[in-house]
Length: 274
Image (cartoon, rainbow, N blue to C red):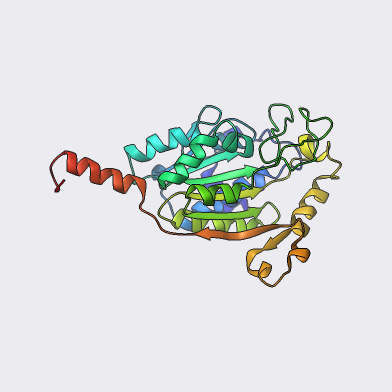
């Protein structure tokens, strides 16, 4: 399977630094397979990442890549897209990177509907920096900054993206790797801001503290807790309980930012009527 996407990796950067049992490698593989299916030119594809466990992904991929500052991946990606709207841009972020320090960039990228593909590796924790809780850490869970459990309500990242104006929102898991690839493909085909939330297990910083078992137990949890949105329509609220939905959760149309911006340039240069 890896041979099919080997061309997209900087093999000299291997082995990767992720912990044994981490789901990030599965998510990265799904993203590489999506790019393969899309048939994108490597020289016309850009991967931008911020800071965190997931952010290391840009260093392993053989595209035009930027490993940027914490929470600012979307700001860098916005500049790249405005400079060359023909580029295919994937923005890799963790849940903390995306929704905490990068939260304003996230909601405004969605509001603008700029043609970027955000892939959020959501493991519900700050893994690289010591196991602090993030905005997506479920309520009543443990972290290094919440030894007596969290009291804050967590973001539903998909609903946040939808409410802010993203025109494609999907959610998959490391267990549902084939679906995850399909979601990234469909998101990339969307003309506008696309968000794919990838639920990924962190056995070291999250699972261990919250007694979720070994990595196999955690990925089984994804299988058992995830409900395909197509099946959810036939289930009662009681049956859904505390499960989460996967699949294409939202799709809409809106003017794309770089195209609208080009119209402003044309008006300013007098090539079209003001």
